[in-house]
Length: 258
Image 1: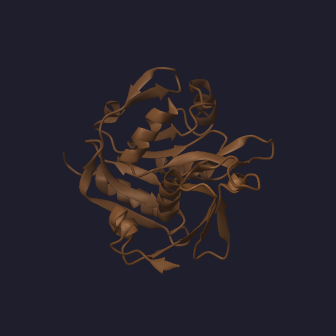
Image 2 (image 1 turned 90 degrees about the vertical axis):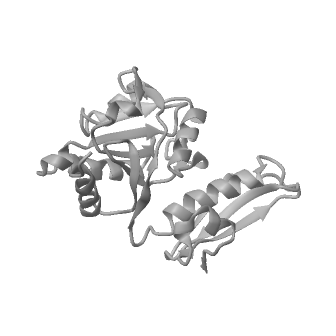
């Protein structure tokens, strides 16, 4: 482990300065600018290996990917997710960050703009319907918050944006979210468009080389939950936060006067 400084990582993520960040080991191929595997070690007892399938053939070129793209995506994903995984953290946006309006397709196969939700707080996260663990856990937390006895908190709209638009069609989103709550909003669209949207939240995602038990590919993605206020501005980012922490922050935003 090392400390984030005013170097590239500290500049990209000022909130990480002075905190322990993961050590990232990149295994380069013979081709300049390419990487064949990336290994992250965190404060947790285990280590996480990304892009395992990029080891390729003996000359290191098969299935290689651009080094700079992998470095950016890996550091962004893991510096914001794995770094605080053991403790959980609420990061407030001061001042609130304006999120540009965007349009995707909802679970009813209708165009849906973020601005439609103006006037209500929003809890939003990026996930996918084949997600084996993180997404179901996040949905469970949001389900508890949606059922809060506090009326102000119950007014919060819950949104899931798919990072797997190639597979997650509107009908898939509807089938996935309906058992959780018919009020939850599922959005999907072109992965490139979603990537642009995710960038506004400093969220990243990419197709993993690992597969599930059925041989289907998985997606690596940031697991944070994002709180937007009634004006659609980003107010807080939750890193492995508890339901109580998210509820408290949501309540503060919900009770604010316009």
